[in-house]
Amino acid sequence: MLLEAAKKRGIRAFHFRFRDIVARIGREPLLQVRGLDVRDVQAVVVRPIGRSSLDQAIFRLDVLYTMEDLGVHVVNSPSAIEKALDKYRSLYLLSRRGIPVPETIVLEDPSLAYEMMRVMPEIVLKPVFGSRGHGSTKVSDRDVAWNILRELAFFRHVLYMQRFIPHRRRDLRAFVVGGEVVAAMIRENPSSWKTNVAVGARPKPVDLSGELEELALKSAEALGCEVAGVDILISEGGEAYVLEVNSQPGWRGIQSVTKVDIAGRIVEYIEETTKR
Image (cartoon, rainbow, N blue to C red; front, side):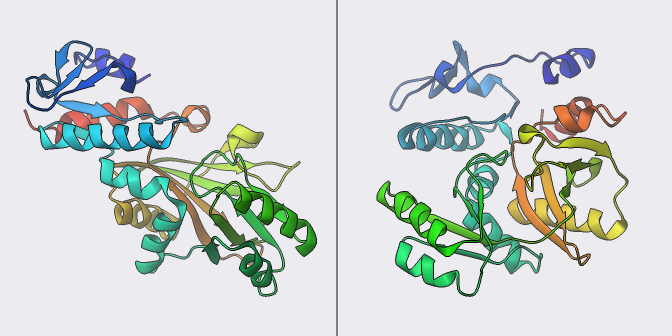
């Protein structure tokens, strides 16, 4: 969709993967993409980095930082991606800005985590890194939680526990481009508490209130995201919580319920903000 949107505007664009990149030190070009010196590229839009080893994740972020250093407009910046990918870091930064987020506990000791369930009797266990609802488990039985926590700790996972917020099996996704909410949707899942489209939720169009729109924009700005999908949960009591800021959001689901050309808006924004 991005390539088509760029073509319509007469912009030369191409797709590449991280495996297409060659990085050099001590010899030119310092960074090469499919045989092209990256300094001949004006802008790069980062799509989901995907499953990777620790080595690959670090290298891919290093490459994006190098692109920035060489004058390429990287959307989103590696700094923003790094913050958003880490659930603990991102929620900490949001909370510091006064943005409401679910009560969260992060630790490594399963015994301590087990004790913490005394103050959070119903929790959602999530991977610190991950998206689309995959790997998230809701637990209300402490003994069941103990077995899960011990297994996670055995495999050296950090334990990320979040208070479950009762809701009507729906949440909101606001799509932000350049400091503007260009589209929004409700995601409903009558068969599960998970509201991600990837796990079966159905998208519906929605017009955000001014308050929710401001919350989405403030959240994207807090992490330095130029393009973002901001997930907002409305509790049964009517309180709004930001669950996540996705720095590499997909838009197939939201595009299906809006007339806004999201890819076109992204390309338009990049064209307007990229130095020539």
